[in-house]
Amino acid sequence: MNDISHGLFAALRLIVTFDAELWEISLRSLQVSLTAVIIASAVAMPFGAFLAVQRFKYRRLVISIMNALMGLPPVVVGLIFYILLSRSGPFGVFGLLFTPWAMIIVQIVIITPIIASISHQAMRELWAEYHDLLISLNTSKWRRIKTLIWDGRRNLLTAGLAGFGRAIGEVGAIMIVGGNIEHATRVLTTAIALETGKGDFALALGLGFVLIGLALFVNILIHWLSRTEREGRW
Amino acid sequence: MFPLALSNLSVRRRGKIVLGPIDLVIDQGGPTMVIGPNGSGKTTLLRVMHGIERISEGTAEWAQPDHANHAYVFQSPVVLRRTVSENLSYPLYLIKRPKPEINTAVEYWIERIGLGKVANRSAMRLSGGERQKLAIARALIRDPEVLFLDEPCSNLDGQSTREIETLLLETAAAGTRIIMATHDMGQARRLAADVIFMKSGRIAETGLAPNVFDAPKTSELKAFLKGDILE
Image (cartoon, rainbow over all chains, first blue to last red; front, side, top):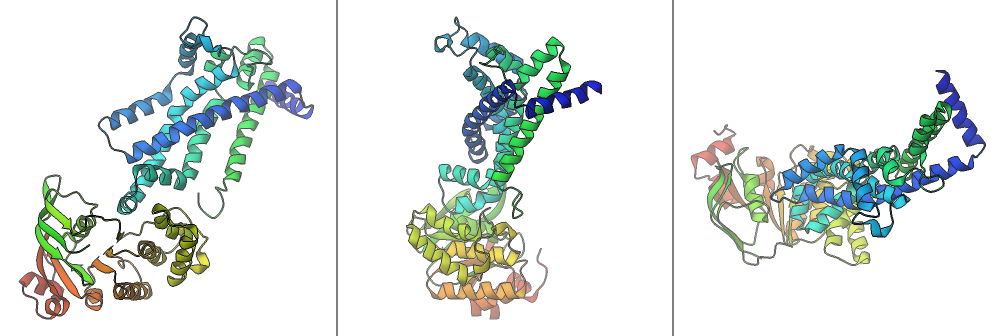
């Protein structure tokens, strides 16, 4: 209990004093996670809509694999990408290991199935509602997907936020491929792991509260910007 | 566009025949009312004509195979999760009409169906009657040659039903071919020029409305018009 109150105090102190390192790692956390969410959403949301609209031979198998990949262990993803991106690995030539881009890549791999699966569920329900109308209007497959994505955008927001929640809280994979290097790849979660390892629980908890606050702030901001609570549309 | 010829047509679902075999020719004229008890195949027949139901056997051939100028209104009105005016403009965007033309058409139809005050509100917030009027206006905004309606007034109050019937009669007078399924015999008598009576997935009787209603030939239609329950 003492540690928690110390943690809260540490979080307040870091915020009030505009601690430079806190700002740096918070902004990096946001930058890495939001970039990963945007790229993953650009792939996963149309894919989810495509799976809702298109019938093909191994569709059920693809959906099952996609759902199973939601439980992909981040540490294993980190390890695989460590090998792929290391100097001796097939993508070593790009020099991405221990850079924020390596962290973004592993986060994309981890959250894409989550966003795709939730998007698919939302699009499937909307497709059941729209199916007869869009078929009757003689729409193309691409037009159907575009219509579902546009009209289901508020449901897709939930998918994106679920991906963001997973990305911003991720530690195992980004620790492996990012290396937790000060002023380069350190983010809130890896900093928390580091401070915990050093035994500075108050600072670790303080960073944890900042992380929770940041996640809440982004969620509320996106809901507010997309007007989900207005006009009874949600 | 016409005639539409259905030849030895049947539709099976899970091995069971739900429609057919049917032979039918539909030509200009109308409005045509498709009547019959629940489960008699009225909806399936309309869907086959519109081309959104898979045919198991036989053929459905229009004189012109282009179905782009058909419109269909479903029994439960489907509204897009958009504003009322965006619902109306959607079919016109699909065929890439110029924006000024779209705006003019939307303004006309939105006033015609009396939803001007809620033009910018979500269509999801409309009542059942308003939704159905919106669905009919959205079907008519492309000025279709053929309009299929599947029991558009079921579950609607008298006022909404009257408004929709007036709209349909005006639409028919303007030259749109109306083919409509209904279980409401009063409505069928008010709107029909000719009638198709269906029973157990097959066409039991067809003819001009006065003949069908005043001098039915089959015992099934006689019983149906009397209000008997048909097995």
